[in-house]
Length: 265
Image 1 (cartoon, rainbow, N blue to C red):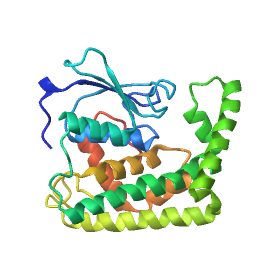
Image 2 (image 1 turned 45 degrees about the vertical axis):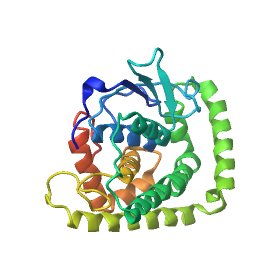
Image 3 (image 1 turned 180 degrees about the vertical axis):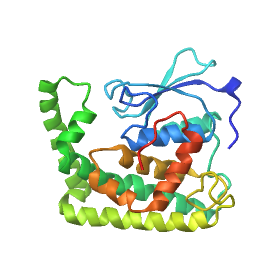
Image 4 (image 1 turned 135 degrees about the horizontal axis):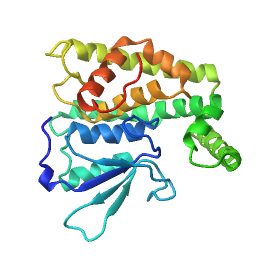
């Protein structure tokens, strides 16, 4: 995809929640937002930030400095950030060339990832691998306080998962649900790769077209977040069991994130 006219771009800072630079982070929503900007060739910088400073108390959020505005604008929630940047003309609409059926397919796949799989992964990270996740997610909080805050986070996530429904299943049942989803996504990508015109060169896309759509930002992000997270060991094994998932994410990383450290194969 061609880069946008940088002379008209606002200055964008993405607050990612972690201080590492030159690396992907564990949050799929951060990776999604970064991928969305890079697909369009939009430049940005990164910073740590904090949920306390975020408009909706969520990571990621961005600071947008536009020459036409007297003060910077803070925007939160990856989906709403992308929508706002499209409306401003900063980002192109990736789905504008899709027909009704393809648009519905794209929306359904994003919902599967963000409204279903996300909670299965949250259970794996925060319930099954609590201490690893706590110390990574709450890295900025001194240890004695981190224990207390971690207990509060655990209680809130447990209640959320129970209310959402995931917490009502056993760990084995949730693992089976996760595997079924990844197995289906792998089959989709196998079909998409078979349509790829350039063979082993360059990325191929989830819906089988010549350009990315919105679902590619989500799917790439979820794969990457699992490959680098030590709090998702079972899901990481699942991803690594499907070579096409690795190939899909690897090609996107190589083209759009050459400056970032890559996961080990």
